[in-house]
Amino acid sequence: MSTATAIDLEAIERLVAALPRGKDKSLLQLPGVKERLGATCELTERQLEAEALLCSPATHCMLFGGSRSGKTFIIMREIVRRAIQCPSRHAVLRFRFNHLKASIIYDTLPKVMQICFPGAEWKLDKSDWFAKLANGSEIWFGGLDEKERTEKILGQEYASIFLNECSQIPLSSRDIAVTRLAQRTALPLKMYYDCNPPSKRHWTYLYFIDKIDPARHQPLAAPDNYVSLQINPKHNEQNLPAEYLQELENLDERKRQRFLLGVFGDEDETALWTPEMLDNGRLLDRAPPEMQRVIIAVDPSGCSGPEDLRSDEIGIVVAGLGTDGRGYVLEDLSGRFGPDKWKTIVASAFDRHRADAVVAEVNFGGAMVREVIRTAVADNGLPIPFREVTASRGKVVRAEPVAALFAQGKISLVGRFPDLEYQLCAMTTAGYRGDRSPDRADAMIWALTSLFPAIVRESRKERSTPPKVILHYANAKRHYGRR
Image (cartoon, rainbow, N blue to C red; front, side, top):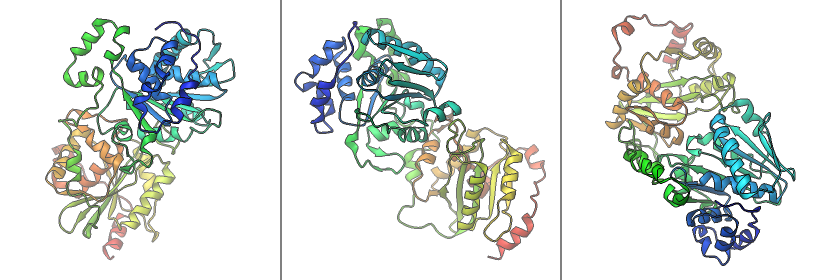
C-alpha cells in the first residue's frame, strides 16, 4: 500500500446515504466511489468493496474471511478516519487483551497511521491504553477477559466499537458492548466486526448470514442493519508472499476452508449433539406431561455479578422425569449472578416447579456452594433438599451417555434455549470447542444424570463412597412427599 494523505470519505458517505439498505455490495457501482477510494490508498478490488461497505447506512458491518486479507487494517483505517473527522471516542475490543496489544496496538494501528495518515499527530497512553489524536478524539483498547479493564472501558460511551476476532467473543459480551454504542456526535453510530469464520452455530453467522436474532431465534427486526462481506487472502494476493498462500493451501481441509477460503464451517461430525437431534421431540406448542421427579442442577463459578465478564456463568438448569418415562429440559436459568442472586433464582425455581432436590457440582468452591444452598429456603420456610455431585471424570465422558439419550429420542427440550443449545452442539468427542466454559451444558448433564442414574457407570471406588448426609433433608423429604 502506498503512502497517502488523510482519508476523506465524506463524499462517499453522502452518496451511500440515499442508497436503500440491502444494496451495500453494489456500492462500487456508484459514480465516483471507486475512484475516490482508490485515490487515497492502493487497495485491491475486494478491499475497495470492503471500504465502501463500512461507509454504508447499516450500523453493524462485518468483514469475514481468511487470514491476512486486510480486514483489520481496513476497519482500523475507517475508525481513525472517523476519529479525525469529528472529536469522538471509539473502542477496539478483543477477547484477550495481550492478543489485542500485539496485533493492533503495536502492529496494525502504527501501520495505519504511517501509511494512511502520515501527517496526523497521535499519542499512545500506555497506562490506560488509549490513543489520543490532536483533535481530542480517543481510541480505547481492551480485552474482555480482564474484569477491571473491561469495566473501565464499558463505563464510557462510544461512537464506534470494533470487535476484533469476534469468533472468540461470547454473545453475552457482544450484547454488553452494544449498550455502550451511544456517544452523541456528528458521526453515525457504527459497530464493526471481523473474524475468521467459525461454525454456522456461531452468533456471527446467525446475525449476518441467516439474519436471525440468536437470543430469540426469530428473524431480525431490521435485517438490512446487518451487512457483511467475505474477503480472503487471494483478494490481497498482491501484498502477500506466494509462500504464505501455498502454506494455507497445504492445511487440512477444515483449516483450509476457514483460513484460506473464509467459509463458515458445517456441523462437526464429532459433535455429541446436533441441531437436528435437539429439534427432535422439542415441545413448542404443547405442555409436557406431569413430572414424577424434578431436579435443579447448579454448575457454580466464581462469578460475582453481571459485570464480571472475566468469570464463567453460573449454570442453572431445571429438568424433569415425566410420567411417560422420558426426560424433559424445562428451564435454563443460567447467567452471571452473585451468590445471593443465584440462590434466590434456585429457590424460586424450586417452588415454581415443585422440585424434589437441588444438585450442585462442588469441585469448584464446594464450601461456598454448600453454604449458599443451605441458606436458601423454599416459600414454606423449609430448607431445600440438596445433594452434592463431584466430577471424577471428564466433561466428554459425563456427556456421552446423556447425548445417547437425546439420540434415542428419550429427552425433549421444552422450548428453545439458544445459549444452552450452542454449548451442547460444541461438545465433541475430542472435547468442548465452544467459547469459555460449557456451564449451561454441565448443569443440564448433572440434572439428567440425576434423573437417569442407571446411565452412569461408577467405578468401584465411587460406589464404595458413603452417601453424603445433608442436614434437614429427611424432614424436607417427608414434607414434599405429602404434597
